[in-house]
Each structure stands twice: as structure tokens, then as C-alpha cells.
Image (cartoon, rainbow, N blue to C red):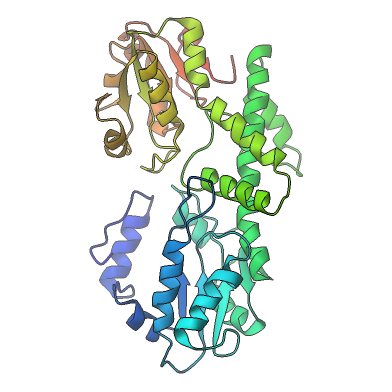
Amino acid sequence: MEKALNPYEEDLPELLEKVVSEGSLEATTDTETAVRESDITFLAVGTPMKEDGSINLDYIKQAAEDAAEGIKDKEGFHVFVVKSTVVPTTTEEEIIPILEEVSAKKAGEEFGVCMNPEFLREGTALNDFLEPDRIVIGELDERSGDVLEKVYCDFDAPIMRTSLKAAELIKYASNSLLATKISFINEIGNLCKELGIDVYEVADGVGMDSRLKRDFLNSGPGWGGSCFPKDVRALIKFMGDKEVDTDVLQSAVKQNQKQKTRLVEILEDRTDIEGKTVAVLGLSFKPGTDDIRNSPAIDIISELKEKGAKVKAYDPEAMDNMEEKYPDIEYSESAASALQGADAGLIVTHWEEFNDITMEEIRKMKNPVIIEGRKMEYEILEEHREGITWP
């Protein structure tokens, strides 16, 4: 942190370097001292998914235990804020008991607790934080909420104050609804493909309805990343444990899994891919990040390899990460070099630079055809391109 090193995220390197050089950001591994010398502690650690879909609370429990040590002998009203994504009741039933036991103090009297979910998107996380649509504060009590609200006093966004459980569920409901929205438009897109309709035109018409909006109606090869898959599965597991039906969410997951290999199916309709070279353009689950977690590219590469194809891959940011998973495929220095000599090209991630692909580069392919998982804006002749959910 103090070296201003960070994962790939737009505009973050410059800001991190600035605050570190100014001395306004100090990093430490001494949790107890950090808590003792501050007024608010944000618990923002990972809650990875277990095999059964539930979330692993080991990291946040340990963080709570370590942080609670810092207020044992501290005077004043310290507020702990759960920032991690946790299922409803976690803060009340898991985190607060740890804080109380370790600190030997009473929550709501000697220290405060809030739940403050984040709604950041990889690739635009900094802007999402600085210009949020809303700020949700789940509070154990009014005093705790008042302290946290002061942190956000200069933010131009509506602040919603609610219960701890409601705040926890708002995060899961938000991500699950967005994932379901994508699965829905992909399913409509598959119908559009059969009808010879451009799904993007359909989405434009649907999105003109103020009740629905156009956001997250861009059809493609499915959703991935570190949040949607984990959060949807965790909510399904949590609801199942409460004996609540999860038909809609399970359908969204099922559709998404099928969608991830649609590009390969469309390619197979055109040609036998065994022994052929296929260029895979875009490895991260979305543009603007090097994150390949649950990326459709993983499923696509696996499917291609299983069917005997040779894979050439390119991504402007994510190749190092993908090479750790698939060290046996060929990685290219550019989209043009990946396409050269290939029997087909698949565009998986909508990186802006892929719009610069030219007909000259297409003609250097052995079989000049591109199957688009994302709708591109390049000037490629129609006979050389086909969309995943559009003609």
C-alpha cells in the first residue's frame, strides 16, 4: 500500500500515489494500534464462496477478533462498520458477539456497529465510490448511524438508514437482480438470434421504459467476476436454508452457465473446430480489469480445448492471470497477432481496442470469420462477422 501498488483499476494508481505521498494514507499490519488510534474501523475483507455456495466467514471473524482487541482499554465510542458482503443476520449473530466477547464491552453502549455495503464495479470502482447512486447505512442504533453518516457528509448522494439485516440483504438483492437482468436479456437475445433480430435494438426499446432502464441489458456471453456468481449462489443457499423458493435465481444461474459456451456452439455451426486454431480475444470477465474470476473466457477456452481446438489468446490486461490457469495455450501480443493465421476469432470481452480491428487483419486469418460475444463497432464486412445474439 505505501509503495502505491494496486490491482489494475482505472485512475486508482494516480490517486493512491497522491494520498501516499501527501501522508494522508498510512498502512500498517498492527490492527490493534490502528483501531486504538482511529474513530471508525471498516471491516472490508473477503467472504469467499464455499463449495456448497455459502460464504466463508473465517476472514471477517478473524478481522473482528483482531479489531476488538484495539478497544479493550480505549476510551470513547468507537464504531465498527461491516463493509464485507455478508448474508442477513451475520452482523448481529456472528460479528457483534465476537466484538463483545473479545473487547468485554457492550455493543450499542460502549461501541457502535453499522453495516455499510459497497456497490462498486470493477473497472469503475473509484468513480462508483466517489459518485454513488446511494449510500446505505445499516445501524445497530441511532448513535452508530450518526457517526457513520458524518463520514459521508460531503458525498452528493441520498443516504438510506436502515437495520443491519436490511442493509445486508440490499447488497445481495441488488447484485442478484442485476445478474438476473443480464440472464433475461441473454435469453431474449437467443430468441432474437433465431428470428434474425438485433437484440440491442430490442434492448433499446425496452430500456426506454423508465421502470426498466437500459442499464445491464447488453446481451453477451454471460456474467462473471468475483461478485455476481458468489452473491447469487450465496443468496440461493441462504434462502434454501430458510426454506424459501429460489426458482428465479436458479433459472438465472442455469441460463448464464449455458450462455458462456454459446460462442463455441455458434462457431461449430459454421465449421468443425477439431484441429483448428481459434483466437480468443478478451480474457477478463469485463473490460477495465485484469480479473478473470468466473470469466466466460475460462469456459470458452475449456470447451475449445476439449473439442480439440488450438487456442491463441489475447487480452490487454488479463493474460498473466489466465496464463496461471491455462499455461498450455498460446498468448499473443495483440489482437492482430492472435487473429493472424487463425481459423476463427471469438470476441469475449468488450475492450475498446477491439473496435480497431481492420479488414486487412481479418484477411490474414486462414478462415476470416469473427464471432462476437460483444457487439463491436469496427468496419468489418458482414460476411466475416456474426453476433452471439444478433445476426
